[in-house]
Image 1 (cartoon, rainbow, N blue to C red):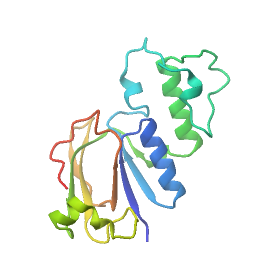
Image 2 (image 1 turned 90 degrees about the vertical axis):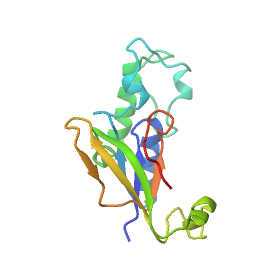
Image 3 (image 1 turned 180 degrees about the vertical axis):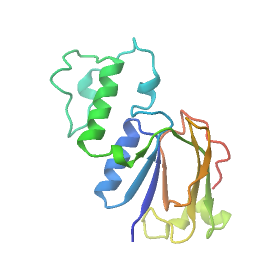
Image 4 (image 1 turned 60 degrees about the vertical axis):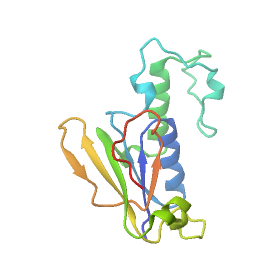
Length: 171
């Protein structure tokens, strides 16, 4: 069975989550409101630089390119690095750009008590519900059309809840 995972956001954490679940054999879809990867880095001021030395802000299996020689890379160098990571691990095809998640809803199969206890994980330690699914409402940020994802996700990873305002979050 193809296990679907919805990931909200294609910043650093969203890219890592996508790669991880792919490696576990799951089928992730990343919903990104912008037209590129990078998360908060894609929207920060051009004069912003990395606030820590780059060695502390790199993927363990994907070093900074030799072309980045400064200790504190620029905003554009960070965005380029994240894009290179997505290309290297073939993640771009999993990302729906210009797709802002405006509401989330867990539907069916679990009572409020089960939801509160997270027992809808099946009691097996697996992150997939045996009943019920997440339904996402997604806005196309170019056309402003709204689409309810009919291919519900068994698992939801909300990477960006700190940075976006998702209305009507119901579990």
